Image (cartoon, rainbow, N blue to C red):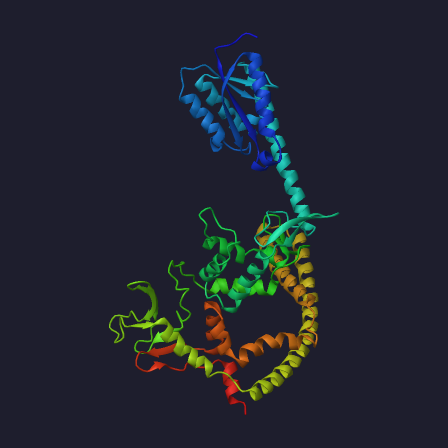
Length: 500
């Protein structure tokens, strides 16, 4: 073998990082190129790998950009660039021609294991044909993958990356399917329920709820960002349905198990539309249960909370920071204020006789609601039949229409009707509660109702805030001299107070 003074750089490319972890594509390409360089007598000085699709401009590929920068840094050296296949250069016709021109301007020799480059009109023609063939194959592959994905989705199978709270598992005869991933699935469900019910007043509170769990996924900086939370709250896969505007699939019932009901999902969407979210604050006062609930008696402005540094440790305080208020800047120890509010909670404890009466009333209401549920079920069946007839009628109009301006509104109408049909179908899929479920579901409510002080005393910050939301409908006014005033009771405790 005759040694050459020419140095060589090798370029290897696979389309995705998955091909690197699942196979040895880059290694096999490099081995073949090194053997080729040795047969030519070239001295290989660098290898530039890429895990990037072959579509688009070469400037989007980090490996190729690094290769060209390496050549530019040594303009006086005689280099050859080696590919194991012409398609590694590019699978886009225009991008391939631009790359060839970039090599030509740098005066490098381009070598390929299965193609001989010739600097002639005929050689350029053959190169262009092969590049166009690669581009055609790429587009055909894209179309084939797209068609397969659409077919799978139309069959009820989710095909994208598993959302948080789900994981893929192989099912015999059905391929990979989504399954709830504990405990993330229960965290997601609690977030939806809490946001819909008002337990979480804003999307920022949902984000902080996620951050409480160390197993919840975070970004590279170790945080759960607001956009991440918004994506979760609007992801239709959690309802057990498939929805894709790109593929024209609207609210198709999927095979995977739902984490939240479609009705709950809709309530969350309605709430998101009607609420303007404040940006997340770094100091939100998670150490203060009464933050946002207790107001100053003088100016009726919510107390602020803070930690004050003492001689040996930090001390928690509430205080009014409204300038011009008589109580401005006068701090109240957290334990003092929360202790007085706890005394108010103690007064809410009904007698056992009232609990028995309330239990009997709840049972009556339960039976009435069961009868109402049966009536609503029959009504939903009639409504579902009507919606399906309307969908068929609109589809007939689309088939007979020829004007695109008319077809678009019809398609929007069909999407809305299919969403309505999915909600009705989900309602009909729910069974009416059996009689035995009353005692099971009433027990938790009566535990709180009979002794809210116990929940307040033993619960954490979030349990205490929940007690305040359930017990009172107005903020608690607090005066440094007179203490806490009793706020307006919720309808539940008002009713118990009026029972004799």
